[in-house]
Image (cartoon, rainbow, N blue to C red; front, side, top):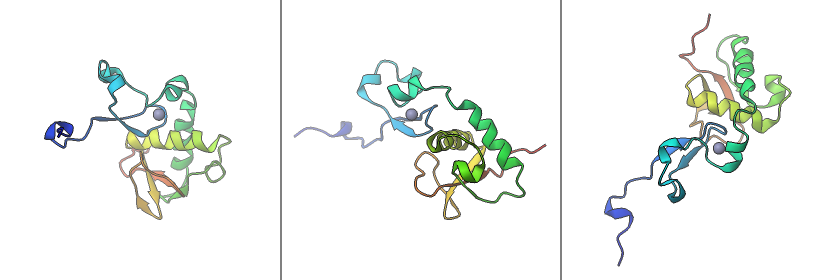
Length: 129
Ligand SMILES: [Zn+2]
């Protein structure tokens, strides 16, 4: 009988992808350079930096709205003409930086796992000038 996971049951190390904002776990192929890994996939590495301007646009739109009401995380609701996934990636990046919150049904959810009818609002700690 083999031992599982060294018997420790410890979870694999995780990071948040800088492109898509999703959490990903350590894989054997990264054993030598895990410290330097920033993207979850070749695709995310290839599209790095794309849509980065959407982060600022999304923050601007939210900051211009009164209060911290939830807004559906869709290009139409936000008023930006970008692809839905581009907008979601921007929101996840901002959420992992603590600048916005993502919610489902009015409850804050883990941004890296949020799916479905996701809503967005400024985080309570975001400084406004
Ligand atoms: Zn990714």
